[in-house]
Length: 485
Image 1 (spheres, helix red, strand yellow):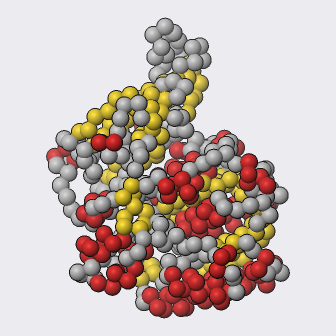
Image 2: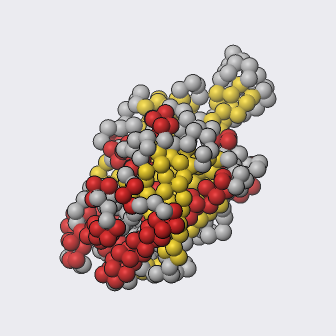
Image 3: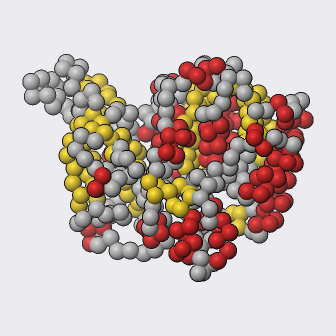
C-alpha cells in the first residue's frame, strides 16, 4: 500500500487582524474594507519559507525515523536562494541522511506542493524510494494597502509518503496544465503583480478547478459523492462556494478555505487544508485534494485505521491555537522590510558567512547536533574534544547527539535594548535540555515580560542573518519560550 504515513503543519505564532490593516491603510485604498474580516498568519522577522518548512517537517516526523528518509522535497514560491538547493538546507536541519538521498526544490507556481507530492508518490510506487518527505511553505511579500496584503498569510505543512503504516492510501491523481496567469512575479521582482479579480475568479478558480476534478473523476471512474471531504484552495469566498455548487458537492463536505484564520499560504495552502482535514478524518474516509496555479493537480486518498496510531503533534489545530496578536501595523511592516528603520551602528557589521566553516560545521549549525560522552553519557553542545563533565575528562570518545527535538527549560535570560534587533529588546539566555546539556542561545516568538526562569522552551530553526549585499541567508536555532498568549 502506497500513501501518506504522517503529516505535520506549522502556522507562525503571530496573527494580524485585517481590521488593523484597514485602520491604517484604508484612507489610501478603501476597497480593502470589503475583505476586513478575520486575521492572517504572519511570520516573525526571523522566519522564511525554509525555516517554516523545517518546523512543519519536524512536526510531521514525530514518531518517524528521519534516518530512513531517502528524499526531502521542498515546494515554495519564496525560496531564499535562486541557485542553491533549498531543500538541502531543510534536509540538513532535519538531520536527514546525505548518502543515497536525492532532495529537490519544486517552485514557481502555487500548485508546486501537490506536484511534488505526485513526484514522491510515483517514486515510491516505482520502488525507487521508500520514504519521501514533502514540505511546502510560503512567505509572500506584498505591497502595502493591497488586496494581496489582505489575502496572503504565511505557513507551512508537510506530508510523509511511504509504504509502511500508511494513514491515507493513495487512490490516484490527475493533472491539468493551463498557462492561466492570474498573477505573476517576474525575475528579481519583490512583489506579485495581479490581474483583475473578477477575471481570476470566473476564468481561473471557477473553471480550472472544476475541470481538473471532472477530469480526475472521468479517469478513475470515481464519483464526487464518494468523497467525505473535498479540498481546494480559493480565497474568494463566493467563488469557493460556487465551485462546490458546480461540482455538486454537499457544502458540509467542503473543507474551509482558512481565509478567516490564517489567510492563503500559497504553495503550502492545499497541504495545510489537507492537514486540517486529516485531523478530523476517520478510518474509511475518502478525501479529494486539489490545488491551483497554472493548472491544477487532483489527488485522492482513503484514510486507514493507522491514523489513530499517530503520535500527538502540534499540527494545524495546535499551531492555530498557539497564537499571539500582532497589534502594530508598523511592526508588521518592518518585519516585511516595507519601511526603512535604522538598526544603529551595532547593526552595520555584516561580515560574509564563511562557507568553509558552514560546510565543516553543518551538523552543528543547521542540524543542532552536539556530542554525548560514551563514557559518562553527558551531552554537550557544541561538541568538544574533552568531556565537559569535570569528573569524567574523557577525550575524543563521543557519539553524535541531536538537541533540536529535546525539551528545554530556561535557566537564565536577559533583555538587551542595545543589541541590534528588528524586534527589540533582543532576548537571549541559557537553556538546559531534558536528558542533559545546556547552551547559550537567542530567544524568539516571545515578549520579555512573559519569560520566566524555569519556563519550558522548544528549539526552532530560524533565520539568523540576511546579507543583502551578497544575497546570503544564514540560519541557526533559537529557543521559543512556551509562553501563554
